Image (cartoon, rainbow, N blue to C red; front, top):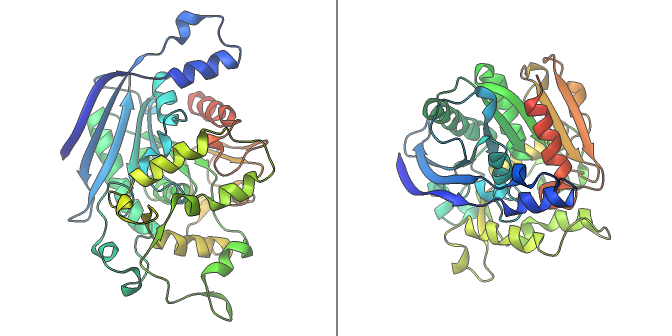
Length: 352
């Protein structure tokens, strides 16, 4: 394990305080004073040799032991391909959960952000087929969960997966139910028909067949990665002027070579889009009925990436809940109604 940096006792959380005051929670200022949040970054080995994984950690708890329900691991989406998706300045879910007493973590799967990129991603994209599928990410998640369990002295943790990260979270929860306390699936996907997206990855003149010539990875600008966010918010007052530039900055920071390209752009593995192609053609890559953990499925009402039928397929758990956030998209975390995403998740995590 390589410790990259530890910046303990960083006082943050101002955004959380502003939000609480705006919501009318300013009657007890003492209770809302931001706590000191410790921040660290680490690399750990994955289950496959030669793969190092980046972990981001924020907490006010200090030394373990902790309770199972206090530990959260966030799993990144394909659209914002970095652990820092959950820690964007001014829009940090990690920060807000840490301020409320949770021990929060986020990770980069291999090929994402600051984790090891496979050698295929160092070559021209057309030289190899798509790399990094959800099955690879599940191996990385296994390594991260075991590391967190050991270092924080807990038996289980909570998983929060966003978009493709929710696919990985679901698959892991099925494989290792003993390690999952609760499961939050945000903007989640299982199997439904989304032809507007699926056709982009089909073989020419062969509907229903995946293009066999897809590249190993993409090189995309932040604007391109957020193209569908622009589409979903078109004509709606859902986002502040500061949100999108803040997210774009984090996306560029996820690839150390982003500034060497003109315009600046990042690499994203193509494997997740293979997984999503099958999901968007109603060919699920996991059996939702086998999820045993308590599940919250939460999505924006304008999120066409989220599977509206998912909740009906989660039949193996005794506790499940669906929440649809009004006036919100697939990127609700950075939008004006983000408070409902965070509040509903916390209510679910704290419920018995």
